[in-house]
Image (cartoon, rainbow, N blue to C red):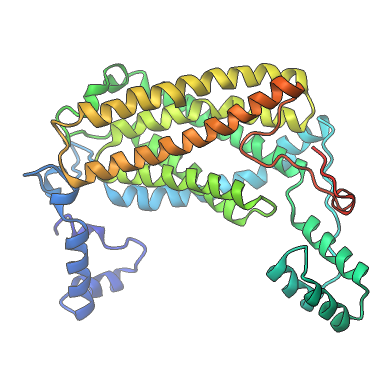
Length: 388
């Protein structure tokens, strides 16, 4: 069996795989599409075929199925832990920080108003508002109140954000600690040119395999939770989704093409600053402003060092210049494009953080970074105000 045939979807049953890989019409189309997509001239340096870096018992080269299957399965564990740890760790912490777990009651069910809410949101056009009053036998004030209650019921409370940040802090600490512990023994951490020398014949150690698997599992779980989680603004969801998508694409792509060494450095650099950032958010929700200021300073220093210096001037510089003699296939340009996309996100976040710093210097308080930071209630919306 060739390397191409091994990329048949592992989720398919053996009988279906047998059907695809035999001389049926579907099997022929599948093999043609697979051969075009996995053409070695695109993914690998000239003269190297997939069979040359096929995993063996002696040398463990990257296998695409590993990043396709195991991280998705492990992401279920992350999602489960997110809910299981709340009553034992994050809930008591929130209560100790005087953050109540109050959830407003949803309005009484109404199919008519529900359809209007999904179509127009909380503010109905005058014509739709009058039609809703006529169809439901409610007054204008009652319809508006129903829409406000419906809106508030879907919003993320300060308690929810505190719990979310708490789980993310633990995840990032575990991932960063594990990453540092395994990377100190890797030669490419101390000499980044080792990321490209003798490419693509870079075998994968078990610790690096687990580092990638755990990292991908976390970002998959964070992506699923972002999609399913209510209450976030569209802008907030979009920027976080872009971050997760770029990270997943970069990790899957780097694994497939055996750019694993540079991938581990990207992952390690981007994990460090998230820890003080998330802790600062939790302190904001807990209204501990003095501690927030100290953690925010630590966050700024780590952000500037990792995201604004190490990533563009160490990792990207090496990817664009040190790799030229070893990676001249089209896939290398795709890697550089993904790195540039991640850099663009870092620039956007740096601008947002700069805005937060300016607010801090002017007003003496730190706002929530990379989230709306609002605790909404029905009374706030009714009065046209928002409480931090």
